[in-house]
Image (tube, rainbow, N blue to C red; front, side, top):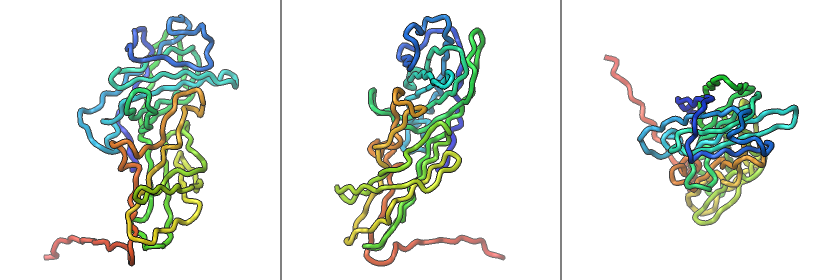
Length: 284
């Protein structure tokens, strides 16, 4: 489930008027710094055009991404200053004005069901220590990479047997951190919900692996259960509480429910048989 989107977002400084649907939202910036301040550099981020195809699932992230969020962080001698702006895909670009300086830039892309709802993080990109300079055209190439979540669990478990579940989150972005402990998933048996507590198993190269704290026990009657990635964990750019909120996963979005859900069958005897077909050409 490791996928890289093959499209680019270009950041450029222009002297043009932005789309009216875009808003500029800055944090820790003196109130006299606004879009008309001649000391600010205007940054315009054209958004990629999505294909016309509509489909379900993360392989079609490009088709279903409709919301973008850019955040700039300036170290400011140990007292970071943040600037952020968002836009929908229909707007065509994000526009934001920032003071000249050196910034870490984080771009988030995802799906927002409706205005005001917490968007679902599907892809991201980043640039470290980028200089923004007045009087020059600054073009920054950013390649979006998908935000991947893998749920590993057995497809079938004998009644009352024990089993484990693993969750792997690949952010592909060193500026995105994930929860270190907690109930990252729930097991659903019919309408009954059972929280599963996870712990960090390993962290390496922006890949966070979790495993359940205690072995799980299958029910004593035949049934089918669903492991669903929980929506109770969220991410804010640069872990700043003043910046906009994003959801890690949400199995309730119809477009993406299969991606955040894993089905387990609880059966009476042996595990479900598997069929392997081997096809060969004749030797003569």
